[in-house]
Image (cartoon, rainbow, N blue to C red; front, top):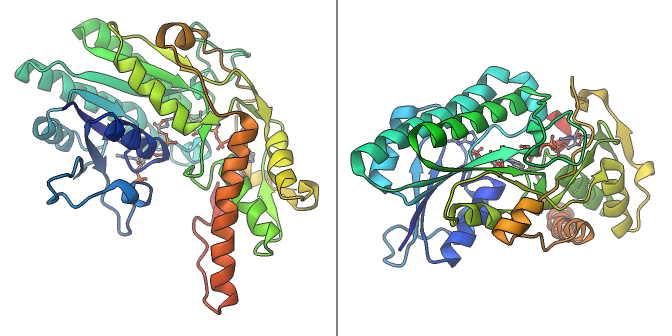
Length: 350
Ligand code: NDP
Ligand code: GDR
């Protein structure tokens, strides 16, 4: 049985990747952060009591800012594959917490690579490593972007991802480690964090539909993104690690849409005109914006045989349907006289 270690297992991608690897017969180990509230919502449905002999998912406390802990986890788990998905992944927040973002995203990756290098040397194990790179690394480079497009990062988050990318390349070249950078364009799902624009829109539109919210405050509606479905993208991560040689790959749909088009589609599905509800609040503008991302995933298609399955319209529909159900539940509770604390406070900060 192959054993995988995932950092960021409680995040959107971590949860889909865990499901994917469990289905492939893997034993999966994930690193979670200690929090004062439960932070395992996205994986609760697949978690089993570790005393259960059938259990194949195990969780370990750790943090990318704590190198010693990472070393111990590697020694304990003895993985065949490591997926480094952990990050302070919000671009706008990275302008407010640049040092922390760099510590987790850039130096955190370096800590994990260092721990892995030593682990491989001492144990003699062959371990493959996936690094979660981002289309944000291309930033201001004009579209379409592929593996040869120069990086031009536009936020502390993106700069940190560029550093992590180059650490990964350097460790591959210097120490012959099997390391792949996935350069993934935006990918969304019903599990997407509620402060990213797609989920913020589908949560708000469905709550507006049911009378639970009046307005949606947004920033730049002109930004264009290449939005795919997270469930499709985790397969690409795995495929990269199954190749004979390590390499870097762009993963994208090859189609881009503006935030305005996303609004049109999501509100349209609910029979609403978004213009009546959306207001622009400059607090959501970024000091430097990434205007247009459009990925060219030809290499992944040719070498990995990967292509996205879910279309833009299907993705929006999936998210709207999911959030409509959440809104219905919230309304039921509210109508029955129970006060409901809105999860996420999406409008408040990002
Ligand atoms: P999420 O924000 O949903 O998840 C991030 C994960 O990282 C969470 O599990 C979070 O834990 C964990 N984490 C945050 N800080 C630390 C830390 N200091 N130590 C350990 N774990 C930490 O991100 P996604 O799932 O969307 O993305 C996965 C990765 O892919 C990230 O690296 C992201 O930057 C990158 N990426 C994402 C894209 C996308 O469109 N989704 C596109 C390209 C790249 P907790 O739950 O406790 O907060
Ligand atoms: P992004 O995703 O920055 O591309 O990073 P996000 O959904 O946050 O923004 C996409 C675009 O929408 C514009 N926008 C708003 N964004 C947010 N969050 N909130 C708003 O109110 C709002 N109004 C307009 C933004 O300005 C931007 O142009 C995501 C993250 O998952 C990263 O971790 C990942 O690396 C990249 O995708 C690829």
